[in-house]
Length: 141
Image (cartoon, rainbow, N blue to C red; front, side, top):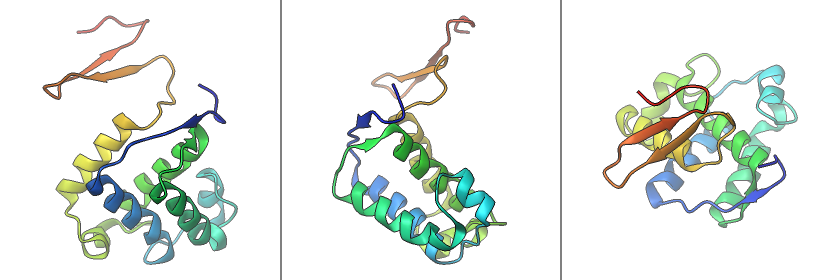
């Protein structure tokens, strides 16, 4: 799947709330550098908040984003949630209203749902929620 392939993703309300909180935190307590903004696919630290809001608006509208845009959104969410240096970090629970425990569960669900970037590793989840990893170079344990 190329970076410019469009991928529709169905999100539940909990996932939408988490994504909204995380992407909007780039306009609040988060303190990115230009280098970090660029590494995440944004133009600059100054424009990250505006660009994250535009990305969120498209997600909320149910648009099918490109693989690259989903990657950008996921990385921005991972960093702002977890990092106390450049993101919300320890303030996350206060700024988002979502506990760390619930946030981790939602983040893991999103990581499984959104397009994958590590081509050799495939994750599947059965109806019971068990995750199986299959990699051609490594047999399942």
